[in-house]
Length: 482
Ligand SMILES: *[C@@H]1O[C@H](CO)[C@@H](O)[C@H](O)[C@H]1NC(C)=O
Ligand SMILES: *[C@@H]1O[C@H](CO)[C@@H](O)[C@H](O)[C@H]1NC(C)=O
Ligand SMILES: *[C@@H]1O[C@H](CO)[C@@H](O)[C@H](O)[C@H]1NC(C)=O
Image (cartoon, rainbow, N blue to C red):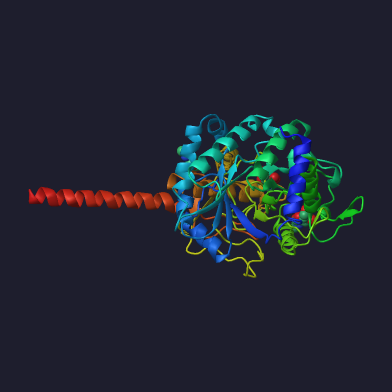
């Protein structure tokens, strides 16, 4: 553990060397998660990023399909390492060497993938994990740093640890401090980050504050002024984002690293499944955030110094995510699962509006609904079963499909399941209660989806079929010639 004196020394040295933080050009990036039943082809996603001039993307793993699609795109990438892998990476340098070789070295280089960051774990200090990943973080970081150095990549690829904002707390921003039980590990972490020139990465969610607390002032979550400003000494906070950001700045300052660059790893607003999760609010929040960050105003504790980078959560809806956090969890995308823009958003990178994904391959235009002529007394179990696998979260109070009525609910559930099953005909059976229709049952904002083809596995299928044909042809030629 570093002595406070050492921290002060490093701190003042830093001040001497760079009197102010470098004027950062904040960039808006996106999180690309893939927990979906209807995945767009990775190449279509990369095209979507490029169409929207997005220059930075954060992944939650090192999916080779996504990485191959990013090759040559010039888009900067933050790879992710799932928490479950930290233990092995921390205990074995062989494992960490292999991880770096397979997931970083083999992709970087000319014409490859611009992997600039590796996120070691995802919110590993989250209170609800009760410390289960905590002790693996530093060993994993140290091993991976060695592995990067061995691969000659230590200068190019920076290790970071995305933390949830629950790592610190305070009533007022200036009093910010890391949770007492994290003080020691945070001291080690920020010292490590500092010595490698890495930023502190934090995920900030005003939506969750609003969702989780009935007395959280609604307008304090947004960026349009508030009737509930927070006064902290001479500083006045008019939005939760700045208040939260400065709480972190104060916590870092207490450890002697008040100048450490901060990256927002996740921030966003969901659009469905709960009352305050709607299109209007999501647009207001995300546009307000982007304008605020790009204005370079910074915050009261860091005037003129906005976060280094901001990764919106999220690029696409992910319909297969766990709904443990709430029914909104599958609806964070600025695009729906199929890459269609949900609302008008100017990312501040040249396009006034979002551009939709191109050449999305949908399944045929057909839907599964309940047959209204049938006796529906036994339908509840079918509906429950369908919704236990497929996504029905838009049916909930506050969701876009909440006013469908009883039969509409059943049809929605049936269709959601049918599409998840790639429209296999048995999947619209439901003991004779389901029927396929060619008329779009969508009403108003409530969209009955049509799935997209899992083109990546379809492509692999075709590819292998192609190989098989050639093998047979060659074999035929061989047999013939013999
Ligand atoms: C590379 O990353 C992928 C995806 O996160 C993971 O499944 C795989 O185990 C990693 N490779 C190694 C050698 O650890
Ligand atoms: C959308 O969410 C905002 C923020 O919570 C809320 O004020 C508004 O009433 C919601 N709008 C609708 C149409 O539900
Ligand atoms: C439809 O389903 C939702 C979610 O389960 C429920 O809240 C709503 O009351 C249902 N509507 C009817 C008319 O049963």
